[in-house]
Every structure is written in structure tokens, then in C-alpha cells.
Image (cartoon, rainbow, N blue to C red):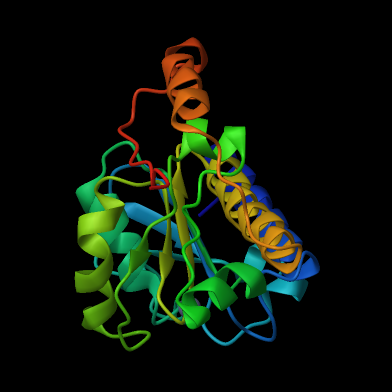
Length: 227
Ligand SMILES: [Zn+2]
């Protein structure tokens, strides 16, 4: 069966984002998993146990909304696809999901240090803070339970001692949010090394929040105001 233009475009974008995540150090080895919602009942996703830095679009797998490959001879999807399926089930506005293990952002969760310090205007405006879902054993249903309350509300979140999960209206939107998360972590790390971050003031934050509508941002954001 020939593939639709929509599917071919999605395959190219998904493979490109997978390779970029590897090149940028957001994943190592065979880590990470990425997906795009194709129509109402098909998910295009990365296969299990493959280095995403070397992936080719023909290796990507299509599953149903339960994560079963539509082609019985196809490779198996990641065991972490459950997280993606939960995001698609809970959010009709989500059409792509990226899950990676960005070193510095994950390091903040390992150290138990907040990633939500209001330090960068762009993050305050677009995300508010970056929440951390409680630790859960990777690849199990525990992870789905731990992320559900967060993914309903946030487009970017951390999984404690594990990784980042970002959702978007397309795969690039989700990837850019992952970049923003790791950039916030890098900036805060440098600030910690230089004596500790000095958060934006409440007045500066309120001013940023007041211009969100100019950028068409209507999602709720939680701000971690300094005391
Ligand atoms: Zn993971």
C-alpha cells in the first residue's frame, strides 16, 4: 500500500527530530522515543532498541491507539509509548510527543532542585514553571499514573530521576519545548555555579504574564514566586 503524503512528511520530520535529539545530547544509546498522531486512530513512532541518532524514516512504526503495530511484521514500538498514548488520550490538541533524557534537566530532578525558578522571560511567558512528576519505574503503568495530572495541564514536564516529556501541536513544537527545558536547566545551572539564581521580581513576572495574549498563549501557567 502506498503511503500518503501526510505520512511521508511525518516520517521525515520524526526521523529528523530523533536524530537532532541525539546530536544535541538529549538522548544516548538507544534511549528516547518520539511520536506523531496520524489521523484519529494511528500513531507513528520510533521502534524499540534502536539508536535514534541513526534512524531512517522507513524504520518508524505505526500503531493503533493501544500501541499495537498495525503491521504484524513491523518492529515493536518503545515500551514507553504508553506515556505518549496517555497524552493523546487526555489531550485532543496534542499531535506529537517527545520523550528524552536531557542530562542537565534530569540532573536537577536527581538533585531535587527546582527547574521552575522564574529566570528566563520566555519560559515564564510560555510555560510558567517546569513541573516534576513523581518517580515511577520506567516503562510501567506507574509512569502513566504519575504523569497524567501534569500532562493534562502542562506541555513540558520532567519525570523524576528519569527524563523530560513534551507535547505539541506538531513534532517541531514538541521538540522546541524540549530545547527550552534543557536551556532553562543549563542557564539555572550556570547561575547556581555563580552564586545562585536571582529570580525575576513579581512585578517583572506579572508584566510578562500580561503580554501572553499578544502571543496567543491561553494555557494556564503556575509561577514559583520567590518568598
Ligand atoms: Zn525514558
